[in-house]
Length: 273
Image (cartoon, rainbow, N blue to C red; front, side, top):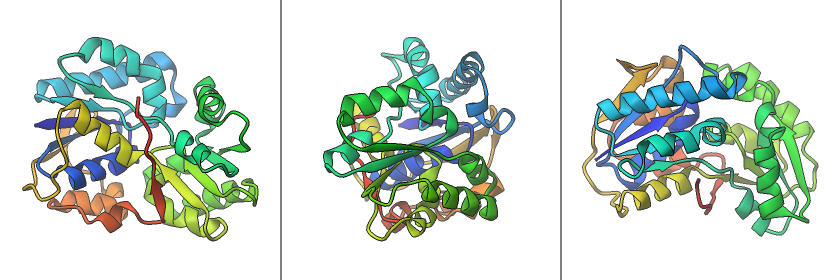
């Protein structure tokens, strides 16, 4: 069974890693879009066109399911993609882990891109799941872009800036961009000791298995691994190999769980879109 993951850049790696951990036998198709990244700077129509183009490429290669591990693409294009693909091909989107962070009862922050932080989408999630809670929205300008470039100095600067703007009483931080788990160790190191990090990648992977009527089987033999770069067959970009998760995926085989949980990111038991 083949699952396609669609994102412009590195944000699809964490969910791909969890799928490889939970069901190694799945054939994974990573649909990246280096020719048009980042999507966050583009208008809704442009993002939707790119997502649908990737989905068309995935359909040509026999994808049985599609995952959109990108908050921007989910809020912008998920409904259109589902209208085109379902019920024949299930489509799973991504929701930031605001609900489990709110369930802790403690103050927390949501780190996200500038666009997501200002969006009505995030505001609705906070209102729905964290009304009455102390929630701080922290925009992280340049962090996702620095992760896409594996620019260590820029990553450290963006993380330090966001950490300075996160109130000291926040007991948790929601990683509200799918790129951020790739630098969870750096984020954890910049925050007070004991700060919980909430990420939804595992929950999205588990929801994908449910939509495909599959159960977890971490002992299964590894399936195929294919990469499309703006529709062209290719390999994981060299920048992906700067991250332990990218190297583990490129190597094939069963994915070590410590690669997925670096930085102490909590598994968010959320219901993906």
